[in-house]
Structure formats: C-alpha cells, structure tokens
Length: 417
Image (cartoon, rainbow, N blue to C red; front, side):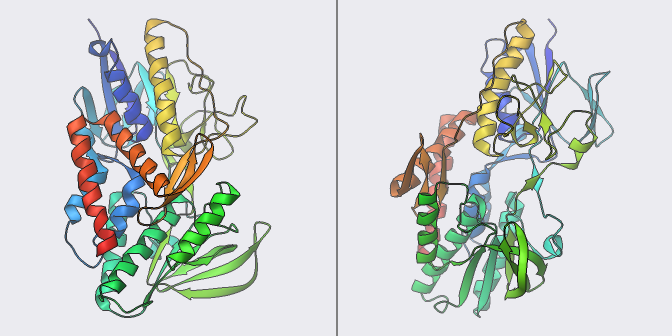
C-alpha cells in the first residue's frame, strides 16, 4: 500500500504541531511525514529570556539550560527529518528543492516557515546588537552580561522593543541583578537596565490596565523606561535614540551608553518566501483561504507567522505568535486528512482576541485568560501551566515532567544568585 507523502517545511510550533497531530490519527501507517528545517532543533522560544538571564556571572548549568528549551527534531518517532534549508518549490513535479541540491517529493505540502527578526535597516543593528530568536542568541546575551558582572564596573544593558520578548528579558535581568546586589556580588545600581520602545507604554498591544501594571512592575524592579523613543542607530558601546511623534522620529538625538544591546524590534518574512509564486499580503505573508490552503492551491497549506488569512477578517491577519501557530496546526492537520479522504474541509475561524501571559521577573506575570485581565503570581502559574501543556502535546509525559522540573530548578536560581 502506497503512503501519502506529506512534507512540512519548518519544525516550529506550526510545523511540528501538524506532524504530531497527523501521527495521532487513525491512518498514521499510511502517511510518510517529512519535516525539512535548517535548524536541527525545535525551540521553545517562550523560555529564551530565562536562558539569557540564567546563571549570569557563572558558566554553571549552561548545557542544562539549553536542554530545557531545545527539542531535537531527529528524535520524533514516525517523522523523517531533513536538516537542510528549502530553496524553492517545483510545483509541476511536486518537489521541494533543498539547499544541498537534493529534492524531496510531496503529495501534500505544508509551509510553516516562521519568521526572522527585522532590523528595519537601522544602522549598526546587525553589527553591534544581539537578537533573541534562538538558543544561541540567548547564550550570547548570557555570556555578555556575565562578562559585565565579572568586570565589576558600572555598565548599561539596553533592550529595544517593549513587546513580550523585550519586556520579559529586561524584567528578568533586573531580577537577577537585584539578587546579585543583595548577595554583595555587584555594587548597588552599578548595572542599569533600560527598556526602549516607540509606544507610550510597555506591552502596548495589551489592555491599558495591563500596560499600566507592566510599567509599574518594571519600574519597581529598577528598569529604566524610555517610551515614545525610536532607535536611530546602534554603535559598539552606545545606542542613539530619538523621540517619536505620530510615528515619526522628531527632535534632537540622544546617545545612551550600552555595553550590551538587545533588539526585539519585530519580524519579517524569510527570504525564501520571496521566490515562492504565491499571492502575498502587504507584509509579505503567504495568503491562504478559509481552510488555510495557499490561495490557488488544493494540496499546499501554509500556517503560522508566514501565512495570512485576511478574507472575512476585516483585513486584519492573525498575530504572529506561537499560540496562533499551534491553533492553526490543528486545522491544517484535520484538513490534510480530509484531503486524503476526499472529505469536507474545516474552516479556520479567526478569534477576536488571543489570550497571552507575559512573565515580568520572578514569579510575576500579566496577561489575559478568556478575555479577563490577570496579574501577579496567579498569572505566573497560568503561564507555567501553558508551558507544561505545550510540552505534553509534543513529548511523552515523563519527559515533560522532567523538563519542567529541570527548568523550575534552573530558573529559580535567577532569584537567588
């Protein structure tokens, strides 16, 4: 009996989610599932800020911290993994062309290409700033801050972008530095953390009440907030800011010293998407129909950061978050099975809101659950429950429990350095 060849390009939240759901179907034995990705690991990105701030000032637990967020794509039973980047698609021959000059044939194709960091062409970002997109990024930031701590002199850490990623990193760094101060390992207020954003408040996409809570929380941790400021350029030991007004840089420039600059400015599409012959949104995302099929295609699906369904959504695409990708993965998996069985397609329905929990240092978080605003320890525990639930969806129960325990032990050290 021949198998249906399903090729999934991208092993992130969306791609791996589709694969795992297909593996749990009643026709798993008739499916040949291949994941293609240039990265050998599936990264649990919500924990990157913890890795970047864990064990600062020491090389202890470095490898253990990495293991909490990385899951090898080669270890999933029932999935063939190709560790190579996609270059293009031969639609006529139904083959994916790979960077190693080989191809992989498909009957059904899933594009879960994710996104890459956007530097918006700001001078100096690529040369002098760090990103927080991969475990390697997190380890580099950890190393830089550790060197600052060991030096024992006054220093400045600047995080640009007060969305969830930037706010979580700034808050956790502040918690660690406060713990180091209490232990007498660094002089009080010798290392400053500054958070910069073009919006008036951190976490500007959340409800105003949560924005205010986030502002108070960050300030209570000692984070210096520079809101309504745009990043003009990054130098080796400084950043240049300029005030924002109605979306434009105005006024005189201001230079802030920075011994470690981290940018969380936003995302853009991977270059490979530009060569794909599909209709795209104004932001370069692949347009999909109500079933999350690429427009004009019957056996090619797209989801997650790289896809946009705007039909019937008042012209507004879903946010580019892990939560969206996981939700879309369920629909894509069901529609792949329906395609094989010649059954009805399921419609993906966009939500009017998405719940989110943002950790803001220690055991404190802010966010929404079922549309209700929550803050404090309760929000933090909900965030950890969300983490555990996700790992349970991709890993055996024992591995999930061990990973959660290991993470809790390692990250607890942030508060008692």
